[in-house]
Length: 249
Image (cartoon, one colour):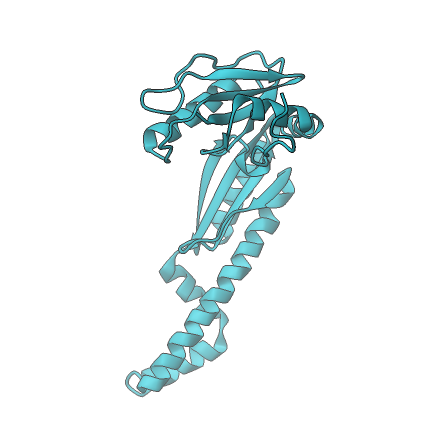
């Protein structure tokens, strides 16, 4: 049976969720694998592991409990190793790297930003900013709506202007919010979002960072900005590597 890895902590971490229910049905008890100055929070992995709601919540709960006692390097859902010994081998091989990451992430949290355009507001904005669009729209209006070719041309001009505005706003978001953060990670692009950004924020500076978000909202009302956090710093931790020597230990 594979080993499911929730996160990595200092070996001296004061609050670890050992024997608590983890993922699986029935829930697999959480256990701690110690190797030198590090420890991994793990459980047995079910054979049919999938991102079910119950397991996603169990993963988050284990990490939340561990985080209550200090910094944790959180693994994303689904991080597997072939055996407990493989996990311990990785901890031994990458001790310095993980200890450095634990130092860097002390007293930090991740905040994820997803931004999109308010359709009517951004259309008004690009119309106001683009004289060419204004002129063609007015010409079409005077001619009773314009020819089919003119309508298509206007639609293409508006679509291009909106796309350009998306790029402008994504850049603006990063420029405005990065100074109050310790680091930034660009998430995968997806339909519906003009920006998917994760910021690593010192907990002592969280209020200032959230104030910067509110400032952008007020100054750019054509954008809808959603904030999710504070979260464990998933976007700033590498997945558990496979050991270079699989038979170690």
